[in-house]
Amino acid sequence: MARNVAQADALLKRKGVRIVNVARSCVIDEEALIRALDARIVAQAALDVFTEEPPLQENKLVRHEYVTVTPHLGASTTEAQEGVALEIAEAVVGALKGDLATTAVNAPIVPTEVLLELSPYVALTEKLGRLAVQLVAGGSAKQRGLKLTKERIVLDGSPEKPFEFIQVRIANVESKFASAVCDSGEITVDGRVKNGKPHLTKVGSFGVDVSLEGSMILCRQVDQPGIIGKVGSILGEENAKVNFMSVCRIAPRKQAVMAIGVDEEPNRDGLKKIREISAVEEFMFLKL
Image 1: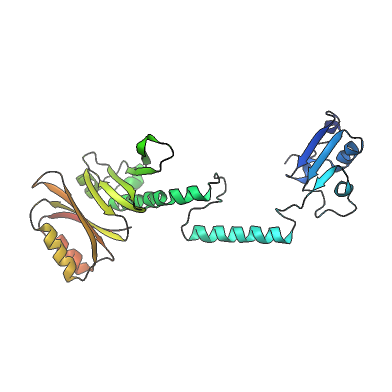
Image 2: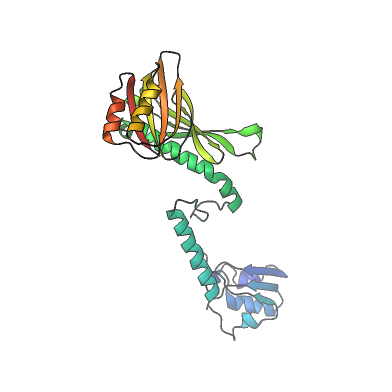
């Protein structure tokens, strides 16, 4: 830390200078500053830090007619310490609850209104990341290295518009499900914020439009009649609450992907029955 930057020699170099120190007391040589003020070389000074805090009443700087002093609000007053303690506690509680950190160390401070606007897209990115990681579970991403990239599109060409689509790509993976839904062997999941909620819009080569809330069953299947009914009947028999279902296919009678939203994980018997449907080539239960 710099000490005595404003020493006697420095203070004598510019007559009429005005000095403001709200950083650290050690930056200024207080005795040299008093002499410079008395000699009218330094026109005025404003201070909220002193070598001894809180400063004594007999401190010449505190009583000097050309010095403006204010309390060191970051440390000295009881009210300031209580306020700082409350702010820290609220920030820690918010971070533990999963809220966006407004006062993260070594991160730019973002206005509250901007954080509120960005928070749905942060939630979307988190959901897409969880989905992608589960899709490639059991592959060799850990051995080869994990690579995340985000591709964003600005709506209407305006930089002030929020980002609508966020893409998360995990490269260099070897997963049966991932390679099945994407020709390149990479798994790509796309999403958007719809009515303030995160939505999945694409899995590999298959376009869908489903909510990323709760849990999901993702089926890769042969596109043939009756599959939706069979899966739905099994879930109904197991008393599993279905909140959405979406099916996308490459072409008629070829491969399709079915996404089913459920409130909780079906029991093992129900999952086994779905797996035994001949047209279902693979399926996964995903916790979002």
